[in-house]
Image 1 (cartoon, rainbow over the protein chains, first blue to last red):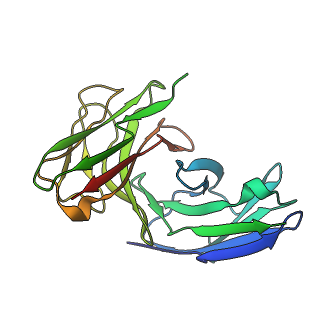
Image 2 (image 1 turned 120 degrees about the vertical axis):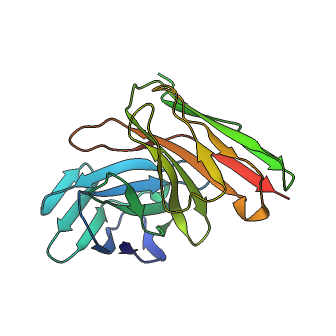
Length: 109
Length: 113
């Protein structure tokens, strides 16, 4: 089975940097995804990691350490529109995505 | 491009009634998925289909059935709805390939009374 943990809530200030952590214990591993979900909307894809290291995409970066079962999503130059839930998801060997419960990020002025 | 669409947007259903949630994608993706999202529980996989003509059970399949007659459509049926099936239902699709990124539809909010 899969066990995916991430903080329930985080608060950060506009213009700052925030790191959202995700730890996982899996019976198989075939990639880790981060999704953003605004209230009342569908999840939208942010990033994908399958090898160790950092993937950078504009203001967002995602890091993976497979040996530690650990990933983080780094958001730089925070904007008010970044207030959303951030979902960590691990894909097992059968292509199914197993989601964490999500981290609700509030960006304050 | 429409991407992936779901219908209805929302529905109130009496317990014991049946209902089919519709999902259609125009991206020619091989794989399609149904999730439910509940407060405090996150997204949970109900059923999936890796390709037209095949389906499989996810984490929470009881009370739900699916079919995949063609590539584009993946309906989810509740044969006899119960209040615990009140949830937001998301359909997703993915193209089989190096990353298999899943793309989500806008969701259906279902209330069973």
